[in-house]
Image (cartoon, rainbow, N blue to C red; front, side, top):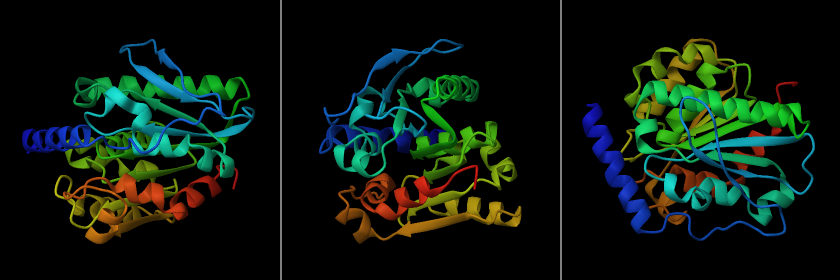
Length: 261
C-alpha cells in the first residue's frame, strides 16, 4: 500500500515539474523577498522566509510543499501566491517554507526533526517580536497536507488554524490515530472529489473522526473536476492548492483565526 502510494506521488511530482507548476506566480520585489538559509538540528534543510514590509507582530504562514517539489519552493502555488503583491497588500504576513527532500518526507523520524526545527525558527521570530504568537497558520498540499496535520499533532497549542489539502494521511497511520489531539484547532480540509492520487475518502474520514472527537470548527470542501481544471490544475485532480489559492474565502477564513479569540 505504502509503496503504491509513493509511486503515485512520484509520478504526480514528475508531472508537476515537467509542466512548470506554479510558474505563473513570482516573488514581488517591493517586499523584502526570500532568503535561502540552513537549519541546524538532526537534519539540515534549506528554507525560504518571506518578510513583509512591516515586519513587526505579523501573522506567519508555515507552508509545506508536496512530495518532489523541494527544488523550486518559491514557485510552488501556495508560496508564490502568499508572497505576491496582491496577497501581501491585503494580508501582509511572514511566509516560511522549508525545502523538504524526499528522504525526509518518507521517514517519520526525519519529519519529526523537520517539524521541531520549523517550530524553533518560528519561535525565534516570535521572540524577536516579528511574529504574533496567536496567529501562526499552517497550510500544505499532498505530502504537505500530511505534514500540516502531523505538525498540528506535535504542537496542537502552537497553531491558530490550518488548511490541509488532499493530505497523504494514508502514508502515516499515526497521523490518523492521533487526530483527537487537534480537535480544538480550526481546520479546513480541501480535496478534489476525483483526486486519483490521494482518494477524497482520506479527508472525509479525517473530518468524521475529528467531529466524533468533539471538533467544533472542522470542515471539508470538495472540488469538482471543472473547478480543478478552471483553476489550472491538471487532470488527475491532485492540485487542490490551485483552487484554494484562487478562492479568497479560504485565506480570508485562515487569517480571521487567532488563538486569542
